Length: 146
Image (cartoon, rainbow, N blue to C red):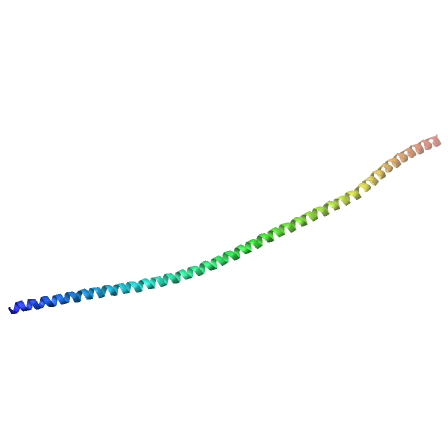
């Protein structure tokens, strides 16, 4: 065997060994990439979980706020209903009081009007008598002077 043939054979053996080492290196490189991808995925998962926890906390707070607002709204509606009922009672009492005042005033006005009419009738009668007395006096004066 010639030295060139031996060298070629040695290079081929070495190349075959290097091919296995290259395959191992490529495999290790892929494993490293997968480990990096796993770390990145875990970091993204952890970040997403933290964001989800914050979102859940914000949602709970919003739900509590909504419940408080709803409770306050119900209280306000009750207060409005109570206020309207109270106002209606006040209005009814005022109307009843006003009706009673008007009735009392009318009850007082009727006798006064009757008395005024009677006084007017009496005044008319007296005025008629005065006119009759004046006429009689004038007649008597004319007779006395004639």
